Length: 84
Image (cartoon, rainbow, N blue to C red; front, side, top):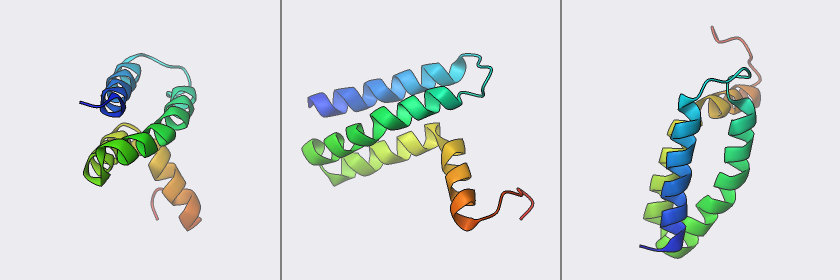
């Protein structure tokens, strides 16, 4: 197992542990930190382990950081109302 995969799995474990902790800001500060570390880590995993592992890591990261992705999608579409 490469160092990139170990780092990716460690990132996923830490992200899940952070999600279990209580937070006053609904984990947004932690999400920003996880995104800042996760994007270069995704590139490293994809570069060293291949595109299949990169896609699997991307899916795992997206499942942990689903609300920032939902807000990004809504911002790109231009709608803020969840009823739309």
